[in-house]
Length: 115
Image (cartoon, rainbow, N blue to C red; front, side, top):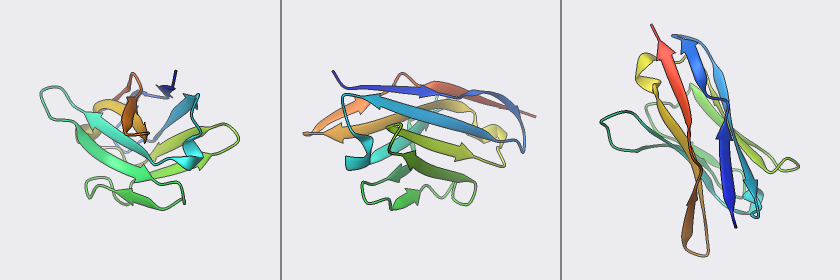
């Protein structure tokens, strides 16, 4: 069974940095597009960014220039480097991928940015 596991969340001050990880089992992330999403309490899930199999990345305007997605193929892991964090970045962060028209999600990792 495909499994995605996020980690690396935590409490950070405004302006700080965090790196989230998304590690997969039973699926090779380098051959699939992997997206990051986030959801704050009471708000809709928001797309954050994506890395496609060829390595091209795209980001939501709200995080462009502050967040960066990368991938370690040997570790079968995708990272979300978050810099210059703002209180509005506080949310549960999820990674997701699709294979054979089925979406897979991790359980999420909480990021809290305190002012």
